[in-house]
Image (cartoon, rainbow, N blue to C red):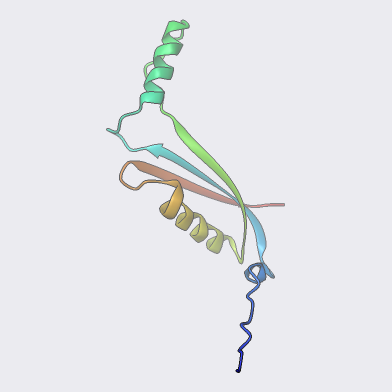
Length: 101
């Protein structure tokens, strides 16, 4: 029998010659969606004596990644947001990417 040896791909191979970036992805609810955490927080702040009208809650993901350039890093962050971090039905998101020193 003839066996063909499969070439094992190195998952780090794509990072050779790449640079390190930090992507910050802020995910927040679109207007009109229920915000129970923000409503509860606002209510409790009022009970503590603060004059608060509303509280909006969001999540910020800080992701260290490697990419060929800043455009590639932004593209990867956009893909991560669409595939996992944000629900396009109810969430908005913003992305900022900076080169790590």
